[in-house]
Image 1 (cartoon, rainbow, N blue to C red):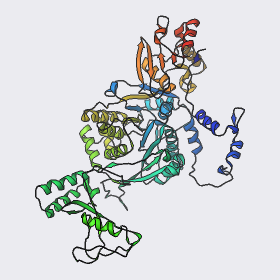
Image 2 (cartoon, helix red, strand yellow):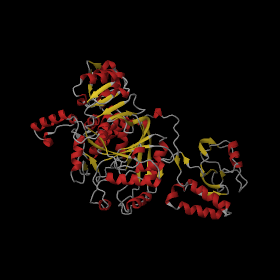
Image 3 (tube, rainbow, N blue to C red):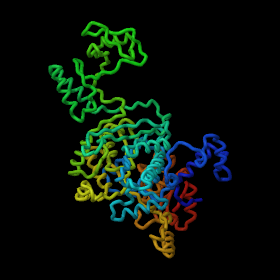
Image 4 (spheres, helix red, strand yellow):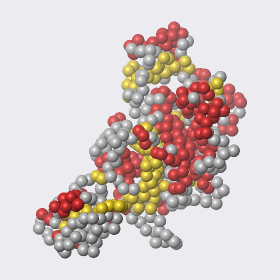
Amino acid sequence: MAEEFKPQYSFTDDRLNELKQLFPEAWEDGVFNVDTLKSLIGDNSTDNSTKEHFGLNWVGKQDARKIASKPPTGTLKPAPGEGVNEDQTENIFIEGENLEVLKTLRKSYIQRIKLIYIDPPYNTGKDFIYKDSFGDSTEDYLRRTNQKTEEGVLVSNPTSSGKYHANWLSEMYSRIRVSKDLLRNDGFIFVSIADEEVHHLKTLLNEIFGEENFIAQFIHKNNSSKNQAKLVSVSCEYFLCYAKDKLSLKDLQWRIEKKGAKDIHDTFERLKHAGVPISVIHEEIKELFKRPKYAHLSRWNKIDDNGVFMDADLSREGGAKNYSIIHPATGQDCLIPNRGWGKSKEELEDLVKKELIYFGSPDTPPRLKNYITGEDFSVPDSFWYIDNSVDTRMQKEVFGDIVFENPKPLEMLKNIIDMTMLSNDIVLDFYGGSGTTGHAVIDICSKKRLQFILVQIGEHVSPKTKSGKYALSKGYATVAEITKERLKDAVVKNNNSCGFKVYKLNGSVIQKWRDFKPQDDGLLPDLFSKLEVAFKNPLVEGTTPQEFITEVMLQEGFPLTANQIEVQNGIFKISHDWVPYTLYVSMLQSLREIDLGALGLSETDHFVCLDMAFENNDALKQTVDNQCKLFTV
């Protein structure tokens, strides 16, 4: 018999099913017996009230866990016309509160995301953070963002607050915990952070992802110095990297583009072939190293007839000390390193023949020449020097002046994306900000096909900052509007078809799924009136077919990029490689005149439509239900 179409998001059920498979003995009469579970896992369990243990705890942690496990209360609404190249792109920009959006995406994108990058608030005391609650988060978001306030659903978190760190940790925990479910087993998460919370963030990520899945703590050094600083000019930030499951990483070989390395090599070759003396070439290269663009390559600071090189150590602890090689300037044995040689005598002599030994002065041990080459890629270092003036210039080119404070360096995001993602992989950034992650994907699109999902709250631009005042003068009321404009500009400048579609967090289009709130919707008579309306028309007035289709798709676990074909007037066929069945959706109010037999429905297909469409024709309803799995609204 046909089933009623009901909300199908359930975090709790997913996790309980996993526990059922692992510990069936603990499942008793439909309830999970915690005491039985403790006895099954023995000494690996703990009771916080009786046993001390290492971990990160704060006031509100239990609430953050519960909020993370609550199902979403809204859906996503397409915003056609707000993107670019919408008919040929798989990139998604979503405007909405990110925790609700993550929950809404969870069923469709579980274990499908290769890379998560986020740049959350740094908790400096001046940042705005989310004020999460157990209420209807979607409706709360919609109400508060309709108000003409600066913060919207964000609140300030001053250092004077008694829950200063706790508030920030609660925000991070719930969002990162939900996003972990979206990562593939071979996926990664990168989180940018500053000094204020880097130690707390690492402990939090250790708890969520497991300390064994920690990859690295990268340091990002920009080219700005804060002369007004009282004690230390802090010009470094961090980004922490974790794998979803290190054991799933097969033959991982990250490579990162050596920005400027090829330039240095090519400059040397050009000048050498032009007959310029080595001494003059050396001066030219030294001038290049003074530029911020090439400062990170300054270790390659020596030049000979064969090129530009740096010298590397030839020793190792406990190495041999009973042989050496001849120093060409003295004709005597070279000084032996204090630790001993790291190469055999034969290897050293072979390196001499290949002119790969840098002898230096007679009173220092020789070193290995490591020439800079025309190769563009190398294993990434944990220290990244990024010229962030490029991003300032970009804003001025696109908008005329600065419209967004502290955007992430575009080159940094390109490096992260390039070294972790392959063609057709998806990157998710749920603190989208000015759209740097999307911009990076669009720039890389010419090399490999990638997809992005960006999430940015409908945060009002602040009229209190210089950049905010300028943005408002240009007509940008929210950060999301700035983001969309930047992404459009990136598509135009790259002259490619990357593009993006826009969706917005909204309430359900199905009447009875929308919560009735007396404080907002009226008293009991208003509830009866609402129920009467829902009985006559189960969908919110003004709902478009695409809005209804999108909500059904997400409930059924289809991604937003699923294929859609209108197979008959008002009936849409939805399919995607990730989902093992075909979905048919219709919001027609009558199916009497439709040739349903022509659809070729199979028993595994799902068909979702309005119950009123059968017009009390139980025979037609039964016929459709016999052909497929029928769900009615």
